[in-house]
Image 1 (tube, protein in one colour):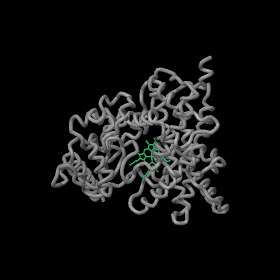
Image 2: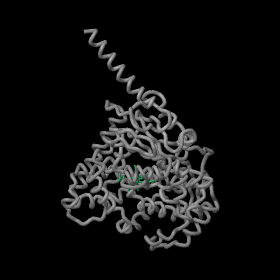
Image 3: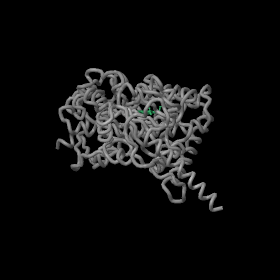
Image 4: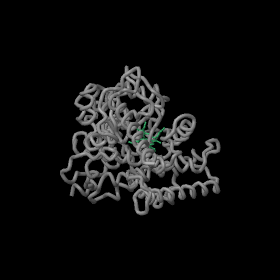
Length: 462
Ligand code: HEM
């Protein structure tokens, strides 16, 4: 008996050692070498080095040592990181069929396994068409006045208060996301959806331990409740048979052929994709404008020229704000909200004389590309004028690129322009405190969510 256990333990030890040896010493027997680089400690690899600091510091030191493609080991997986525009294009666009999206299983369970970002192939294409139909300019044009009403209300609620910018912007972007998904009907369900979504998000980065009292358990319960609310909205719509012009209508269309479960997973997925990204970008924009008074003055002037009073902004107005648009682009570049994305090689892939083994993660490093001094001179400087000239192809990818590129980018730009219009024409704001650091968790964000004081211009002048 003991001999059998002993032999089994010995075999397990040999297997582990063999796996580790192969990882460390690149003896997979491939014709080509693995990219250069180090894999760090067993299992944890270099996760701590990457996530405990500005990712640029980690990427830049690796790049200096090994060049623009190097291997590492993070979150329990061997991976290849790529920091050149050509490599990002190879993975995301020209050879995207060789690299599938990849997320931890617990995140898939929480957002919903049928959500768009977890898929490839026909099902993904079908979902993308439905999402793009609801978020293309023709469709979101019709939402401008409703987005404007939400922006005005959000800013009013911040007047005269010490605010945490990120927190307030999350409420704004959540409300716009609900508008784009459920149309004006969302108002009926907004508070319930908000309550459940806020519990869900608290468990998103928690340990996936499904035991009584854990954040993960509470999150999964909130997710079930969210699904019930969405199911109720779907049922009400089916009964009423009225016409709608929003994402839910696109998902529920007869030709879409989606099950209620697939619709729900994608509704929750879009809220997830839309809210924190846009809120984080808005927080950065407020910070950069507060720190660059000349740019703020020029943006304010541009916005004052389109004040429409009672009539409100039109879609055409939002397409005629060149300086404000450059401020958004430059903030997307400097802040690089999503530092990188993840894919997984579906088979052994050769690239630039190296092998990327099947199953390895591949990370195109958006932040490194956006901060390359060869592509963007003085990369740390906030200078919107650099976008007076279009960036070279594949050097500016804040919304990703290729088959999974962000379908919500037009809506994100619209809601940012509308909020900035009312903010710069009616309010003054100043940063509170001396904190100037950056938090990475998982989106890059000014320290403590950027505490601010916001006041109406006429009151601030008194
Ligand atoms: C400033 C705001 C935003 C940024 C920086 C951003 C960035 C991105 C990026 C980089 C990707 C691609 C990820 C990858 O390739 O792995 C992506 C995908 C996606 N985004 Fe956005 N996004 C923003 C706002 C939004 C909004 C407002 C919506 C919806 C209304 C949205 C919906 C989506 C969806 C559904 C996907 C998945 C697409 C697919 O897998 O085919 N995003 N986003």
